[in-house]
Length: 342
Image (cartoon, rainbow, N blue to C red; front, top):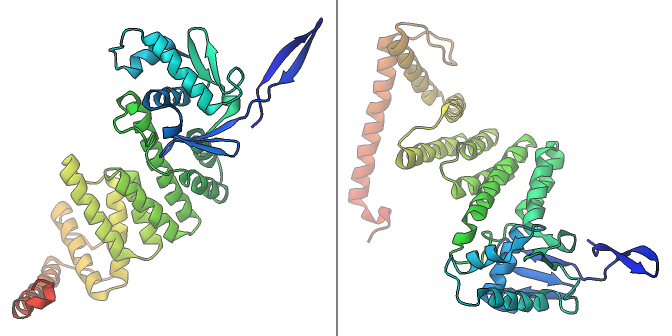
């Protein structure tokens, strides 16, 4: 990033020149940090709450002039004090001296007609870097996209505008960034799965479901990664958590794609467990029989079932499960120390 280009008049000639302003790099995700040369400024170094907020407002609309009237409206929540314009101008002067010492006229903070703006040629903003890297990944192949996504996600040091406790004036920007963050984590999980990096995929998908617990695509990425890793039982447990969350929060069930992923996990589990395979085949047969009338089982096993055989398999399984549960209860009653409760 270099200084801004401008035109200089010398005698009768107009020359193209470049100012010597020191560019700045700003961290807006998490706690505010401003890098100017070898100096690092925090929110405490730029003159207090109001100058910081002016700076944040201008950063969120980098390169766009913001009128004094709009800044006053936001700073004082529609109830400006007497002399608000003069007070605003004094805050801007404090901010300008803080972020561009020695360059008050040519630094990144510029004055426009009736307002102020930050020159994007002199400001590198982590929020824009994050958005650029995600866009780049969306257009790239998996092998090219994954490093870009990891780089973007490493910029997430906290919520956008982490120094603002109740940034009502920035709710829309914060919500949009939170949604973009979840999308990037899901894309990282899907891309890692495509590359066979299942541990990474599971980690990113778990982060996504923790951030947005009713996001179907996030849960689908998690189930897909667990399936590819051969961790079928964990996948079934994850689906059960998803189902309960959707029921509690939305009053609905997971969608068709999630249900299909769940069925694949059931089949994969059955393939690795003969007894469970028999029970699953019987349940699938009974489901088809009840919905469609007598029909051969279309499960993965070759033999044909009839209602009586299917009922016997399921009943036997449930009977043994009941006995095991009762034995477990009796064991815990006899040995309460096994529960961890004294």
